[in-house]
Image 1 (tube, rainbow, N blue to C red):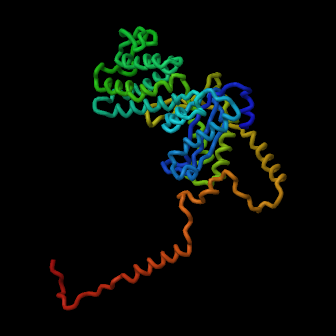
Image 2 (image 1 turned 120 degrees about the horizontal axis):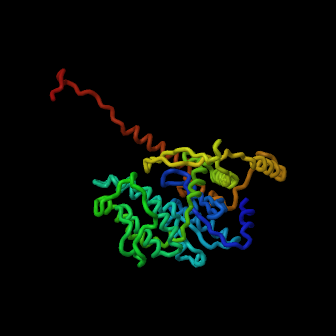
Image 3 (image 1 turned 90 degrees about the horizontal axis):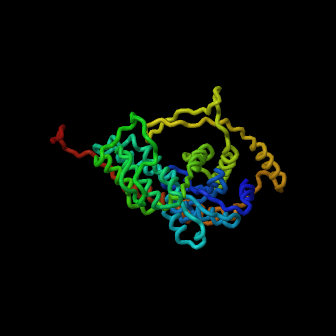
Length: 388
């Protein structure tokens, strides 16, 4: 499947989206799967599995290794014009400093950026006298997307549109100038009678908290990464899909985990173009889902059921491979050349101790502690009561 996808480019430049996913919910992950997907076709192009033993036991470095390994493999086959990732510090440094990626544009995922802003607004609304900021959280996130779309590759244009939200939330839709020198005016048309979210008071604690988020210095330095309006939201859907094949509450071998990741990618690509179910009236069907973070409902499209027609082809390939391989079913299978277990057998990166010495040391400690026990006897000639 990967070979067919790469052959379909036929000299065209690719715009890829990348993101990593750990095999555990904590920070001490054993495996990481890094996936590169096509931004226009919404399909998984390549996925790489990284073992923590390959980065000397330091799990935060796995995503950078997975990114580099995936990019280097695809660069040998296709021409990459742009790559979109989350705001990973190590990946940003690699793209900025390595000569092998100097001709590839680097953008940050707008989905992650908007999600981060949404989270900050919700967190700010929990402060004193800022409760009225909470209903504006989704609108601020959506306006961040709108500003990136209107930027058209211009950093100053995105800043100008982004700052408009500070005027809009206080019911101020016309002002003197934007930061790019254009006339200060909201992009929407005439507003109907406002019956929904209440306007904020200019200079109020809520408005000042929002101003601090919008004009954040780090966001202003990195806003150039969002001006191409790229996002990897469907990769988050793929990571959610991975939970069916490789749940984070279970442990797997390297070969087993890699096989599950590949099966999940096959399933995802086969059903990526499923159509939405329509009702008796011919209209697309939706269901209501609730977000614990925003405390609001949102519509989710109802898709047609999966068919899994590719499973028969997989079974045929498995049996054909078995026929082509000599030997019996229980024969020894050598470890692959790229298996991390060839260098380190254990995840703790420590050499195996001598089991005889380990048992002897354990027994000697047991005997030593047993001999040091003292048997206490009751004192003689004590009265029948004990004074306090």
